[in-house]
Length: 404
Image 1 (tube, helix red, strand yellow):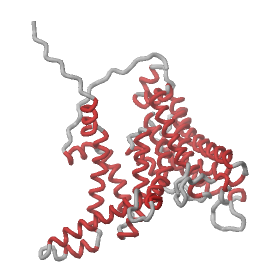
Image 2 (cartoon, rainbow, N blue to C red):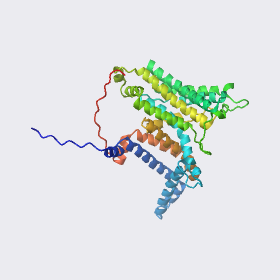
Image 3 (cartoon, one colour):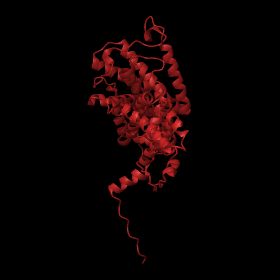
Image 4 (cartoon, one colour):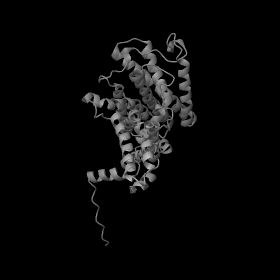
């Protein structure tokens, strides 16, 4: 009779938490951000004239170079913090927190558009069309906002719904084409981005969407009744943030608690197995792109009604492309997307203050954002730099539940 090896004790909740924090995706994401910020600090230091001057006499007074390096990096990141989170030099608590309001304002459309990309990722699709979906959402919301007069609360709801529907239809077109013809969603969504941009440029030339007697291509300002309420006087943050947070909560419920979300995840994991289980892959593609497009349309509507208040041909800026970065950093989860949107909103809000106070080029912030994505996409590189252990995984048998 062979002696059985002693059973290993089940790890406690605390042990599992520490293991996930040190070897899981959380650690990789955090360390990717840290590594990107460190490289950004190097770029800040190298481009600082004071550091270059101190480097010229390094061998005679090396301490001056060390002091200049510390002053350059710390002042730049300190200015970024004071411009995006809290300004300790302000006289009142309200004024001190105004920078965080800027961060929330920048983060609002990034969260909504990031959810559009993240939902598609979970279903195995690459939604590169958030830019076009934002444009269509903003266009539909703007049309309702400057054409019809309604009571304030009802006007906001109708305009937000119009924005959601505009983005949803634009995303649904890509999903339907993918489901019917098998055309690659990347190509389709990129082409739809161009169509949306050119369609808006055309609309701004016709009488319905242009301002009388003005040559600039911009629409009339939306009525005050539809402009999103700003709860804090002097701050730019508006209740569009509440709408995108509700969208994030719905996305979490959809993916984690609903049958439809299970279908999306099953299709994203293995379309062939999902078909065998009775799941319609084509309907799932169309549905997830419709819902995701609606999230991007919501972002466009919130951005227009809460911040811009009128349409221009550059209404979406780079939001749709930044949304891809946000979804990647958030690892395609609704909670992670919200956190990533806040981080990128802080980087955007703090970049202006950093440039004004320390003359640091704003482009360095863009480099930091790109490096974060690079390191997120290359986990072995991050593990090698910080000498992290690879977490062991075990195979888990898939659940078989019959037809869904």
